[in-house]
Amino acid sequence: MHRKDLVVAREHERIAQNLLRHGIELVRGEASFQDARNVRVRGTGDAADRVLAAEVVLIAVGSRPARPSGIAFEADEILDSDEVLALDRVPRSLCVVGAGVVGCEYASIFAALGVEVTLCDGRDRLLPFLDHEIADALLAQMRTMMTVVLGAPVERVAATGGGAKTTLRAGQVIESERVLVAAGRVGNTETLRLENAGLAADARGLLCVDEHFRTAAPGVYAAGDVIGNPALASASMEQGRVAICHAFDLAYKQRVSPLLPYGIYTLPEVSSVGETEESARAKGLDCETGRAGFAQNARAMIQGDTAGLLKIVFRRGDRRLLGAHVVGEGACETIHVALAYLQQDAPIDAFIDAVFNYPSICEAYKYAAYDGLARLARSAASGR
Image (tube, rainbow, N blue to C red; front, side, top):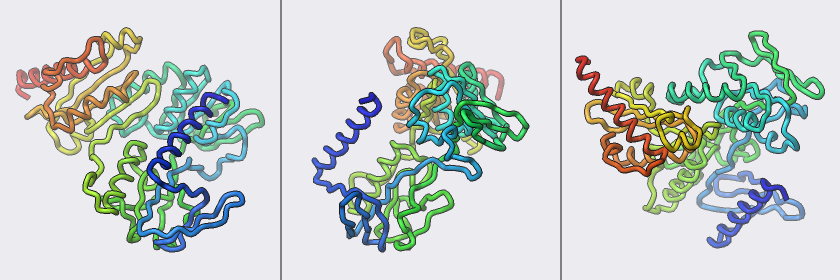
């Protein structure tokens, strides 16, 4: 058994044991609504159809890769982000269409495996929801591994028999052995017969919910990718918990935290929580920033990751932390320190007061705070 298959099998077994331990019946098949209280499950194999009645229904069907029209996904050379996992060998070259989170992650992985990768996107900026400095730092490092073409919309993707061609609107043609189209995701709602429950999905198969994750149909809730942004596994689990707590009047969890850490598993990793410098200024917050480059961090030097960067955003008046952003190895772990400080509404002075392990990446928070205070001092001295 391949290592990947072994990991998947063990995860399936862990989930099965967890369901068994909690006395949960697992019914396999394709489900659809008869009405808001009854769900028909079409059995698999010789299993008979069943109708399950319940006072509460939670829709958590997830999502799948979007497939833009006009692209011949039936060709072996053109893949979506699920199909790429089934490749039987690593291609010599790969063009990744779409520089969103999924596109950037796969581009990084294949480049690290020695594949000649070209990543292209019609937007002028990589991952525009990120803090601009962090996105620029990621882009600079990705360009040492692959070709990145931004501001160039894709006009056509076509298989050529043993390869593929990606034509950009500007006229550039990218030839590669395989093309991965990463065009976002759509909700898996097309077979649910939502209309029988009085519901309708939007053009991307997504459902609307309120703050308790209730849909427009009484007793029907939805959580996870099927409700769209943020579409994070961590947030999806919390959404499901909040939905069930509301449905059954359980007091222990009433909301999903507004502070969600975002983890992007590119090479290097990127993670962020709270406000970016741009979002803080757009909201009219009087903010300042502090930075700590990994080139001055002993742990990063040991790891050979001296191009990383940690950036904090804070209010000028009371120095309260507003957000933190990291690019570099281990960023998705390092960000949790900032998350804890944000939840406590702490000032950046708390980073300076704390004692961090040495050497550690997290020590960079202390030096980012020192940098932020120095920026405040220079501003005060200049009369700003």
